[in-house]
Image (tube, rainbow, N blue to C red; front, side, top):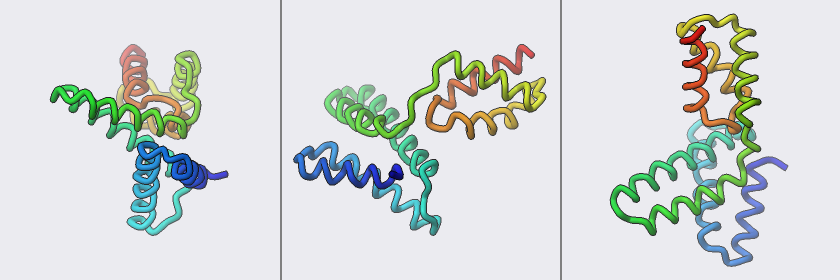
Length: 149
């Protein structure tokens, strides 16, 4: 079953169960997917749907930080609940050891030796670790490795 179909099925289940908050989160997600499909005139595959879900999670994390800064704890908690609903659709995150091994392998495969090769390395890692690792943290690790190398 595709990720998009799974989101649709889960939305129907939330509707039947009367889970309004989950239902609204899933509706927003499906609307964002549909909007991107219309804008780009394509049918999104699972990787593209996953990128939409990741973008929505990132937006909610940023919103939660802003709500806390504005002393709006109830809104921050709502954003975090939405993150919890969306996290279910992300693949299993990579362990630190898996991530370090992947970085070492990609650096070796690309022959990267300096910071000038950062883009090449990050491009490959992004394809391999999409949805399974925080790319900001990966970027910091690659920078440290290439800077030290």
